[in-house]
Picture 1 (tube, rainbow, N blue to C red):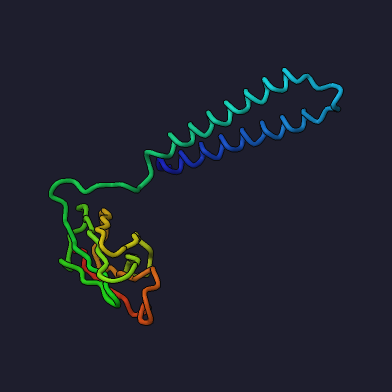
Picture 2: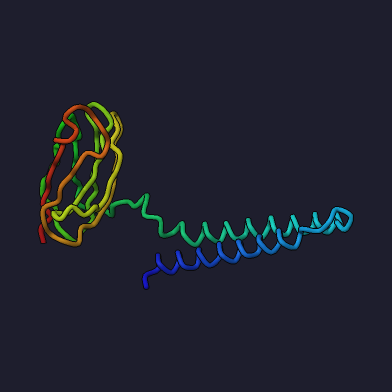
Length: 171
């Protein structure tokens, strides 16, 4: 079991325990108004606030370090310049090596585009938004050699459906 699966399982366990606690609190608080001790109730509310906040902090720190966004390319990584324009991708160079990080530097010449990379079997690999006048960088390491297809994932005009690019990943 990989670390992401363990973190997800722990997150579900924490949420389940908190949910049961909230249920029990609500169930036990169904007393008639004459039996309510306001000081005790205020103390319980503060306690539950800190329990929930603590659970949220644990979930945050349990998952933030495995979030895949913000990865930067190491020095000497392969750099691929991609110019997205209606209705084509200009990919330079068109060949990268497997097993080494690739930094895609994405620029749109005209309107917003999506940069979606798929395998030969149409399995999704990665995606990024490409906006005009801004360089978007996304880093990925390809494990398998082959031909990868690039599709525009943002409607960009009448020939959007024909906006397809390709590049090779060599061993």
